[in-house]
Image (cartoon, rainbow, N blue to C red; front, top):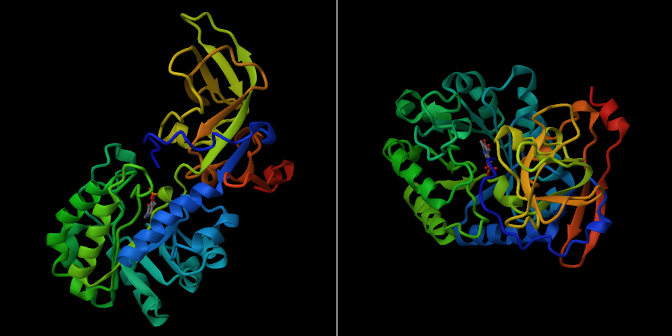
Length: 389
Ligand SMILES: Cc1ncc(COP(=O)(O)O)c(C=O)c1O
């Protein structure tokens, strides 16, 4: 969710930008297939179940490709559970910080695992699940995290997410089939191992009651420096030690590096090089089209940015003073109509777009870099803005 990691610049080099209208998200299906090969091998080597976290990426036309390899989805609530059931199938695992009565019957119609955030939610809904043969899980807070940004640290003492690991003795495990924790964010293997070592003393006496352990998301498995063989060994040992089905639910790693956002310069305002910056107004609004730029916050990588040159502040077309993508180097003054391309824009972007100022969503284009096939899968117009409320 943070999107702070260095990404590989080799992708999208061969994309003919003149074929792409602006603004557009372009998703390279070959990159997704390459990522899925890594997950396929991990599954074959370890028997782990891997679920796509729909909160990160839920483009329904790509769900069939992903469901060929992954085992199901992790849903954050009713709508994602319904989407998962309809377009993905397999194991639908639904977790929410709190469920509501009016939706719960439908939640259990769509899910095979329901994970609760608190003892009171378990007590309230457990019977309904057990009666329908739905596995009940409990989210625990490991009270250990290596995530430095507090907004993305779900495992501190004040977190509202999960039962504190040192409170497990207060839980009646008789109808509970699984435990779940999610405490990583864009992390390599060591953070998972360190977390597990902290919680194992508490879980030792509990695992005999359990059938599955869900290690959440945040595993950056498809990143080139990820310690995959260490994860493989760890998953094998975990399975042997606990006798439980181990589950991972990555979002970001499934579509890592597979998407870009293409925009264009609508206006260029020359600064004075010292006090007033050069400004490029683009048709990409970070507020509307890349909300994590503002929320995380982070500076997305610009394709082909030189190491030195003219410094230009790129911003969006909305009224918000802070609708700024970031400051970038250009070899020469950008011209009106020039394309700008921001890298790694598949996860936590399409799921977060909004119509602030009535600004249209970018078109969504699938591209296969193997055979150069293009397909526009969605264009937006006034009707989409009009019908949203
Ligand atoms: C409970 C849970 N599972 C899975 C994920 C997916 O994490 P990521 O996309 O970082 O892999 C998240 C992300 O916030 C989460 O909260």
